[in-house]
Length: 354
Ligand code: NAD
Ligand code: TYD
Image 1 (spheres, protein in one colour):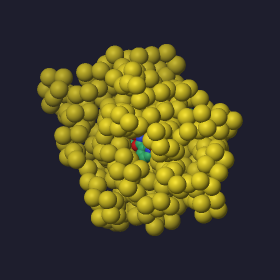
Image 2: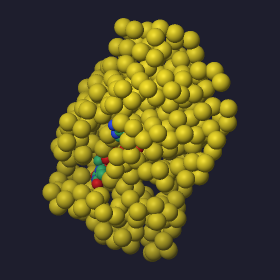
Image 3: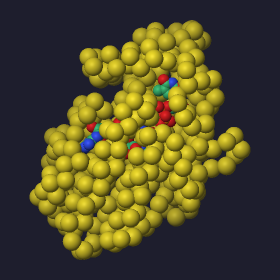
């Protein structure tokens, strides 16, 4: 096995990571995929039930901040490729607990970078450190038709986006200072199966099912740019194999939605699939206090990725959202398992504060 075929994927038990692990394990039987995850509240091995017994897959429970462990794992598995997704990922949690975000997202990324550098020791042939970031590092846009491009200056506003920006800077610094073979991508909001139900789309599907209030922040006028998670995983596969080292690519589907319009599509789709008359669940919409520092609009320009590597999203939004709602309705056991216990208490506390 050559070094690049031993691939460490961090955060593989989370939402996007589980789709990336599944894609790599199934598509590349000659690779060894090592999924490293701390299994925080957001990590769930049930996301990977279908591939957990494959011979080319290994799960390791570890914290990316544990530098000695990172050194040891990269050495033990002769890791040549790293796809780094492990992170604290929810803006509302970052407002409550910024330290955890700085620790995992900044210090954890640094610990992984340094462990890769020490192990690879200047032999960078066939090696690759691919860092998964977000469009939120670019800050916010007005309603003026402009987009985030790869050269947009960083201007993060939340502790989450500030911590992701910090990690991106460290990754680029490791290339510029030590020559580490890095790539960074910045993607728009993802949706699809296995997303933790603190994020807008799965939360609202679950609340409609349980006839609970749908908390719309502010006036629901903020705009997000949505991409089906499997299309993100396809982009990661392509960029990992064919992306230019030291480069940055934006990933997005030119699919902007005002929150309130998106929420109405979710309500319509859930009601339709549950057999409710149209509009039944609109009464659940509840306007609540806005998120502090709430970015107005995100919109990604992914022209570079299309022109240089030929990537385009494969799903139209209407199809993606229907598939997604159907998946959550078909997998209520998955949802009930992760929302029982501590999470339910956390959610009630967050909801009461609004
Ligand atoms: P997620 O919260 O669903 O999953 C994160 C995973 O990382 C979990 O499995 C968790 O257990 C693990 N993790 C957390 N701290 C860890 C630590 N210290 N050590 C090891 N593992 C740890 O997040 P997601 O939505 O799948 O996002 C994955 C990555 O993609 C993140 O880096 C995020 O910033 C980025 N991203 C997310 C989106 C989105 O819309 N969800 C968009 C663009 C970029
Ligand atoms: P979210 O899924 O948390 O992603 P992000 O903040 O990373 O974009 O939120 C998406 C949008 O939905 C964002 O503008 C905040 C809004 N939102 C609500 O209005 N209500 C909610 O309960 C949640 C979780 C989000």
